[in-house]
Amino acid sequence: MNILVLVSGSGTNLQALLDAETEGRFRINSKDGNSADGSPKDGGHIAAVVSDRAGVFALERAGNAGIPALIAKPDKRLPKKERREELSNRLLGIAREYQAELIILAGFLSILKGTILREYEGRIINLHPALLPKYGGAGMYGSRVHEAVLAAGEKESGCTVHLVDEGTDTGPILLQRKVPVLPGDTAESLAERIHKEEHIAIVAAAVLMLDKKSK
Image 1 (tube, rainbow, N blue to C red):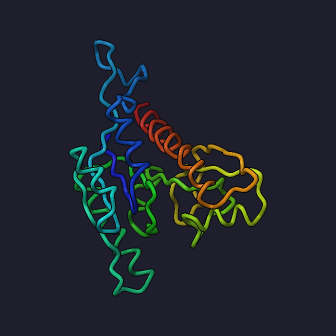
Image 2 (tube, helix red, strand yellow):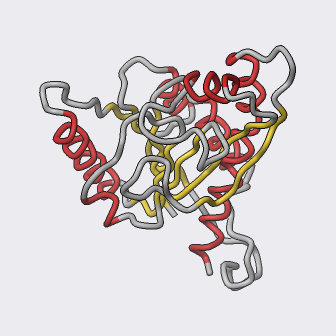
């Protein structure tokens, strides 16, 4: 099952996925997925990584792992709606080229629109740094999310992996991991605590999707 990973930054969650594949955690171990001799078949394989920004460390991580590292930047000459659809169509072309069956948004900041959502319905997952449905939607990314959580006086936060639909952070939730909000927390300290859970969550969600596909 070829996986296309979309990124925008340093790629720590991408690294968690790369490590998981290297460690064999993407291999199919279900009864129906085993080879004739009973050994696990190959499962997920990260076929390519695409960034919507040039020069990010995630691309270097992919290159170091021998994975094709591509750049697909939004065309800022276009109005926002057309820009999102044009980028999404280019990403769809890449997904088709690499025969991707699963698309993972691992810290990807561009919004997907149009045909890619229909062609890959139920096969695109996104990681969000909050406990959705709270603190999601347009403009809620990065430190903005953690600042909003702290401003609201929340006692806990965390991360969510969900299926991507036509909305922004509105798709069905696959799994969540929680952390406490501690006295004296800043957006940075809260983010650091959540990052550790993100690395676990993104791999667990990928395995969940691979297992579902194998049945």
